[in-house]
Image (tube, rainbow, N blue to C red):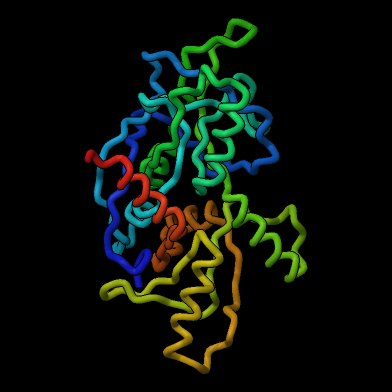
Length: 277
């Protein structure tokens, strides 16, 4: 069983250059104060270089390899410069460039941007990155933006995850059922089914799903061949950030990430649209 049932998918991927990604700094929609319709200067270090690449479902015990099949989305101008957001969980003088797990979430934020400032956002678009490139820059420092704030100090740019709002609600529902309070929902929830393993080549992995719906579909497919399984999967919600920390410490080697089918389908759609006639 692979991502969307296929072995490979090509996605438009952005190399972050020297950009810093503060892993573990994840925010929910409610902490976003404002998204700025401002374009960074042409000489800014903060720029995504979009290129084509092949991305395959990983079979190696390597964190970056396992993240390479996970797409994330960013709002940028046509030159790859990101728009900035004011959020609660950054230091004073910093603003965030946002990576979305959901295209729909990115689209909603972009729509709000366009309503606020049509002139500044006329070249705004949603681009695709791969999560491994972001993860590689996790320990980098904030970058200068080339933009001065009201105090005459240069704004620094950091990078943050924007948790998928739909999957956060799914996680809240599951944890409420288990008696766990809402404030203990993971920063970026991923889902696993107790006892479910999937064979990838010669390796068996514990699949972690970015989409609860995808987990349910996989469970039903497996159940068709093993009818004595429970009708519904025993689902657990885990924190992606903590999983990645465990993988870095070699404590979790048998994990496989399964990105949202909807995200993969959207990436394919974007590629088809972008192909020259």
